[in-house]
Image (cartoon, rainbow, N blue to C red):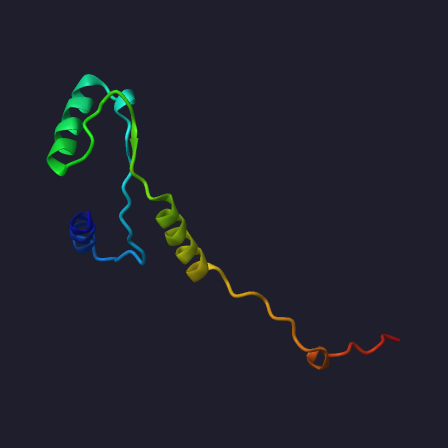
Length: 95
């Protein structure tokens, strides 16, 4: 997966700031015969489950959350600091 990400990103002039591959799910029970057959062959070659009677979830959700938290932390503006009271100019009374 990382090879696919690097190949894709090197073919384009702009580079993504964050790249993180994640596994997904094999939803065998939702696929038609052809898709199920193809994915079962791929899964067998890769050492994954070939039990098509149920779905298989491979997503590492804590890793997804850590990745999202990192992006949020890096893109969120810093908290606004309150200026000290002596730095706030006083407004003269109007006459």
